[in-house]
Amino acid sequence: MKLPARSVAFASIYPALGTTIRSELALAIGAQATGDGCPVIDRHQRTSIRGLYAAGDVVSGLDQISHAMGQAAVAATTIRNDLAAIRALRR
Ligand SMILES: Cc1cc2nc3c(=O)[nH]c(=O)nc-3n(C[C@H](O)[C@H](O)[C@H](O)COP(=O)(O)OP(=O)(O)OC[C@H]3O[C@@H](n4cnc5c(N)ncnc54)[C@H](O)[C@@H]3O)c2cc1C
Figure 1 (cartoon, rainbow, N blue to C red):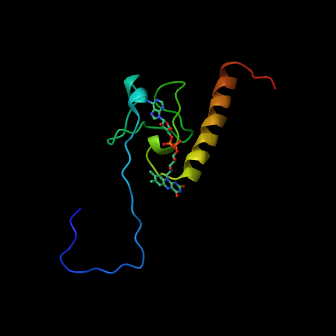
Figure 2: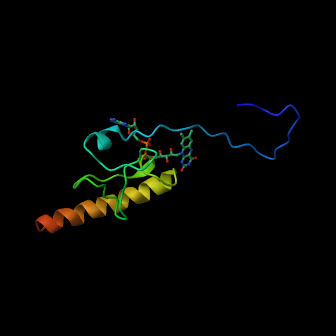
Figure 3: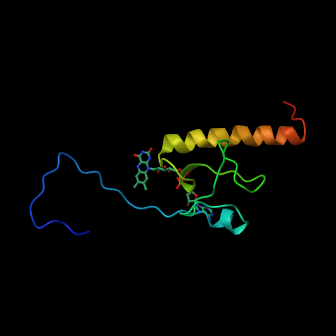
């Protein structure tokens, strides 16, 4: 990182690390990807591969714990509903 020659004052500094998208397995079985290598998902976390769902940092969007947990809940509900569409699930 190149810093300016002059001094600069900040009220606060938020350091950020880069992340590596670990989508190799999904892409290896043919999941459609965004330009930056994230699996493409629909509004219910389904990828383009039937039976494969994605949530959290691996998909495009806000990389925060609460967001990942919300997406995981949506994925779990979708998995349940997709399975129920194939065969009725009993409680
Ligand atoms: C430095 C830093 C600070 C952060 N601070 C905050 C914060 O204060 N608040 C906040 O909300 N979010 C924060 N985040 C973001 C937050 O950590 C992520 O959004 C969240 O962890 C995403 O959860 P995830 O389950 O999608 O991925 P991860 O938590 O990364 O979990 C993925 C898991 O899969 C494993 N894995 C990957 N590839 C494979 C493979 N091929 N086979 C088997 N296992 C594999 C990894 O080892 C990892 O354990 C921070 C992130 C970083 C890097």
